[in-house]
Image 1 (cartoon, helix red, strand yellow):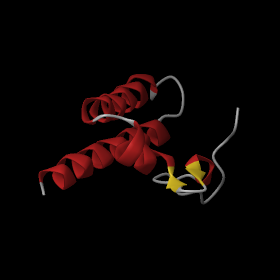
Image 2: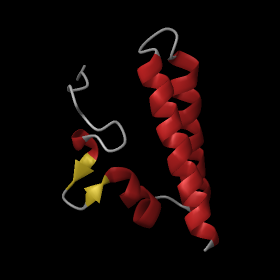
Image 3: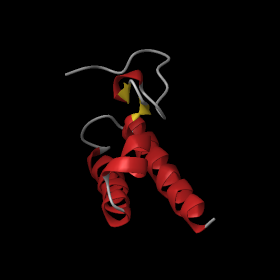
Image 4: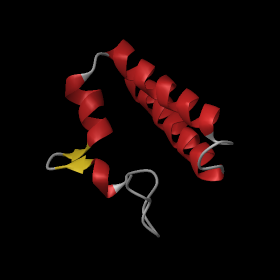
Length: 80
């Protein structure tokens, strides 16, 4: 299992960036439908909150917050 690198950006880890940029941005723009994108964000929020006390502690709670923020930005941007 790949460990988080010291100083790695938790919001946009390098391992999730491809030639066209951030993988989640690609999902939002081209790959997933609106409902699928919301479901993906919700799934990740629930996953990281559910496991934080058994796996990575505060790091997992921080990741849940990142996904919450991305979901909020997705919904805000969609309303414009």
